[in-house]
Amino acid sequence: MFKLCVLISSLLLVLQLGAGLEFKDCGSKTGKFTQVTIEGCDTTKAECILHRNTNVSISIDFTLSEKATSVITVVHGKVLGIEIPFPLSNPNACVNSGLTCPLEKNESYRYTATLSVLNSYPKVSVLVKWELQDQNNLDILCIEIPAKIQ
Image 1 (cartoon, one colour):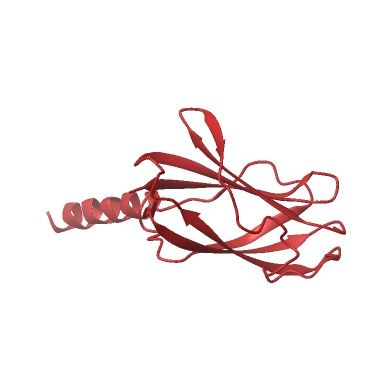
Image 2 (image 1 turned 45 degrees about the horizontal axis):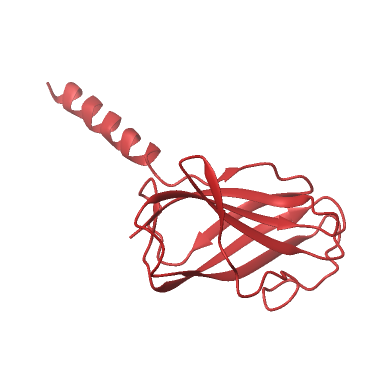
């Protein structure tokens, strides 16, 4: 009986750990993210909760396989298969984001930004698609972040 209880407890623990937040690559071309941190996001949940009428800070650690002379941030929310742009106050990732362009090949970087979650956004589950694009509009990074706006 004791072995059965230990087995069931272990299975439940594995299931709980597997239900945590996963950041997925959605087509990065010249970079690879090593860590994503979102302020106030509970990574034990399947979705990051974004509260309306707040600002959310994000940081992304990444490495680069090719030089980038400029970097632009593009953010979309995907709801019911439709991508809706999230406006950013500063889409130029080379200014006030921890990056100084040009970015060099084989180097590691930390990008930081703030996203305004507007009160006008509907309360829905959304897949946030966060892209850093180079001077040729190619994705250095593309990261999908499961989120829920509340």
